[in-house]
Amino acid sequence: MIGAIIGDVIGSVYEFNNHRSKEFPLFQASSDFTDDSVLTFATAKVLLDGGDYAATYQQFARAYPHRGYGGRFSRWIKLDDPKPYDSFGNGSAMRIAPIGFAFADAETTLEEAKRSAEVTHNHPEGIKGAQAVALAIWMARKGEGKAAIRHAIEKQFGYDLSRDCDFIRQVNKFDETCQGSVPEAITCFLESVDFEDCIRLSISIGGDSDTIACIAGGIAQAYYRDIPNWIITETKARLPQEFLEILDRFEERTFRDSSQRPGQTL
Figure 1: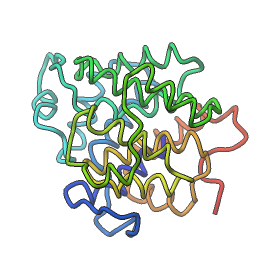
Figure 2: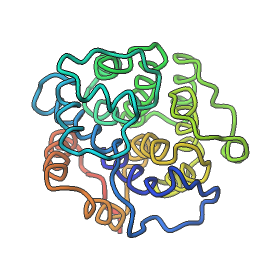
Figure 3: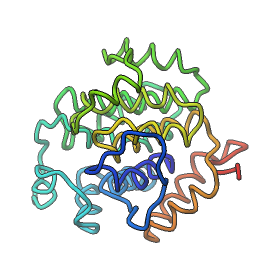
Figure 4: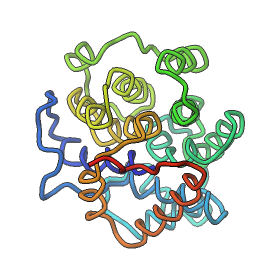
């Protein structure tokens, strides 16, 4: 899931200051983790230790305040008995990466994606966005090619993946819905040539930059596997110890049967 965290950290400075070019410094002094990362680690914590998604999302959001949470989610965090609020925002998709890496079969992956989404984002579009990203990660993990991933996402979820990044870059606006960011993020992955290129494409199209890069980064990690070590190091330097421990535990569990963990290129 480190690919999603990298996308969030790199995209953090461009969310409200879009940069519509692939040429930019990946890291700046102000680059930091946002709500995307907080809730991604919360998802991983549930997968590792069990527990309730709603309670864990509240716990992590309260522990790491002022990270860019949406207005409705910010109110939801404070509730004693939280209920879903029919959201189709991209919050359900931005936190989903660990689920795409965690399960052996597509059916369980989709079921768990729905379970994680519907504690807040129980609108059909909110669930669909989470499931689409989880399935794309799962398929990439399993070695499926980009054509197969494109076909599956278009067929199962009805997303239009026909627009290329050059076109999206010209028309894309800030849009925090699943409908306005999940297809764009998947397109950035499909058009990329390696992990770094995927992140640069994700920033370059504008819009909700940190979330688009977070979503695309998770898929790109699963597909390309190699992430330059220096990018991982720069990202980890911006994370609290609790997150680093969750990441190590999660990667140990999900990659223990693999010959290669992310970050084995220089």
